[in-house]
Image 1 (tube, rainbow, N blue to C red):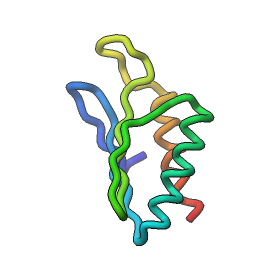
Image 2: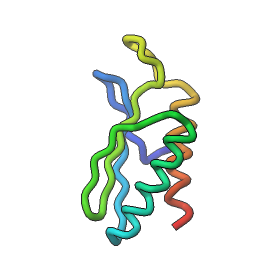
Image 3: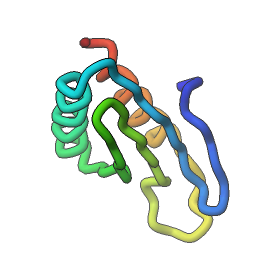
Length: 85
């Protein structure tokens, strides 16, 4: 979790993942898609050949919603995707 940056206005978590090859980037994106479908949580994603930028906003759509333990757990699950490489 320590590689995620907490931002405000709007409240969110951000992280950049870097990979040595396009194939590893693509593999990570495929696994992220599977996790997102399973959890029904869909982060904002931007990517290039060897990187992926993710933004996670609070699961709640309420104004000024705080980041919850579930939000942190989802970020941690995303981190775990890189451990299988």
